[in-house]
Length: 348
Image (cartoon, rainbow, N blue to C red; front, side):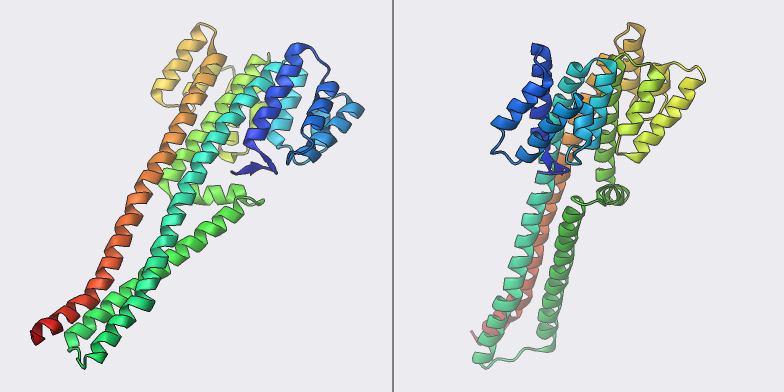
């Protein structure tokens, strides 16, 4: 599971849910966080909880306490600050808990989309390697032991099959190495550049990434607007916490239109990020004063679409690898067995 600066999305969801429950029950945060640090002493995040508890005792602010530890994602920290400034920290934490729970599901789908094809690719490379290094030499030894020679066409056929096998093995090896490099880069500071590269390279990844970006953008806007901020301020704050530069630029353009007096819902609908149906849904919701609820609902729709897109990507990769495996192995074996079968038929 991909982690946020060392803390998993599931752990972040649980943390936000616990903070929301503490606030709802009216308990002091420093006592609640201290209890979380004690009960979580044996968990991977024990150090983060302990440091957060100590910082909270000193500052009295959850936002300031979280800022002292880089393990907490910047997005979570800034949204916590927005919640404290607006006096709606409980609602913000509930929203963040739901959002990180959704992100955990999406990341699980991404892991599946990467891991299973990699397993098939490794199997493809291993089987081809066995055929080329073990099966083909055995056939050659059998023919030599029988004292049979191969004519030019048979020799050419075996050479072509072997060359194709080594070629596919080389391509599969390069793809596996590329997948490993990408997986490593996704855990470094080059994560955003890696995502941008994959987005430009693969159309299906581009579509999924766009859905995820819009989902997070709408979710942030829903939380900031429900926190009592004006539309223009909500847009600016949302842009400051988003990691996707393209989404942040789009929000800056929307903020500029709002400063010129444009309506929020209409500007969002015309921004080009929403599909026509969802744009109409937002306009209708704004007319009856429920635009924040509609933003959250549309965010869920786009996140579900992204999950479906990942599953569709896996459903395309799997049969392609299986077909490739079958064709290559079958071709290599036939290139050796057909000449041998011809020689044996000539003896009978």
